[in-house]
Image 1 (cartoon, rainbow, N blue to C red):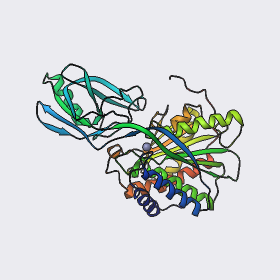
Image 2: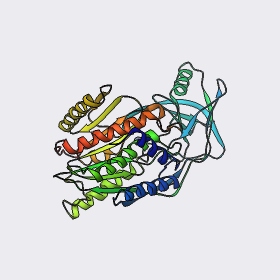
Image 3: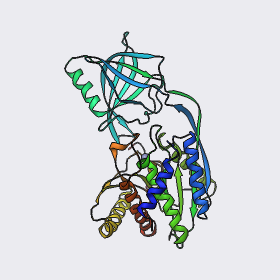
Image 4: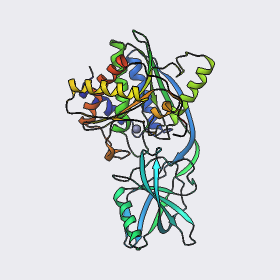
Length: 397
Ligand SMILES: [Zn+2]
């Protein structure tokens, strides 16, 4: 059994390596630590390298309102933002809503127009909570700064615009592209005592501005604990566990994995590197504080079986929990890469959105308690969930 105290100690060790931004030394140190822990438990780990076009957040990201009053707004560069020489500025115009991660979150987008009326920067106002960086949607203008601001600051800009007070801002941002960003997916196979095959995953990377205890140190430690427990009491199904890198880079790690798995299936049907005969995928991302558990899954029959199993497990062990089922699943985390490939998949989270992509996403007992509990739940799900039906790879909808 995993204790909350053990989960907390592991989480503290993981965050001691600093932010685990894909391509950076922190994530390499975390990968080495995970490997040493798994080898100590008698498990073998394989690495799959993931190479993406490089991007750096720089050191300056500032939005200062200069009219109708002077105020500096907390701001972060969006992942993929361009930079500007010195400061650019001008009038702010509201463009409208912007879906991020598909439409998992709907923010407000503003353009900053320079003296000649041309766009010099974009601002992205969060739907709720403080300023928090997210990856820019594909097709964004990578030459210009794109800065994330908080919900209340976005509302203030909206009000000023509505009241014809013509807000103006100055923006400084030295984010930039260049080189490659390389990191590893970490893969561990565990043999089951019975039939079937499942894939469990969680991302171990973070945004650049946080050590990510909740997002997703929590899921990383849950997977580590599951693997340790399975060396003593093996699962019924055989399980492949994958710690993904680059989830925060538009699911770069899991998309690479699925592309390689499709290739493996084409070459050798039934290969353990393929995804064609998986019973299901279970992704653990974001076991924050609290007692509100969301489970996303597809197809619907699998979602229903998953929900029933979670509710039963919680009734016996966590009567305080509220369990919400979400169908169809969002495109906001790694199970989406499998969902798009027509693989039955599920995603578990205790959302803690105030801490999402924030420097204060630090270890605490609430996270540790939910990690320890989710380990028991995941063991049950791997052993008892029925094999899910396949469905056609989703197209646009
Ligand atoms: Zn996450």
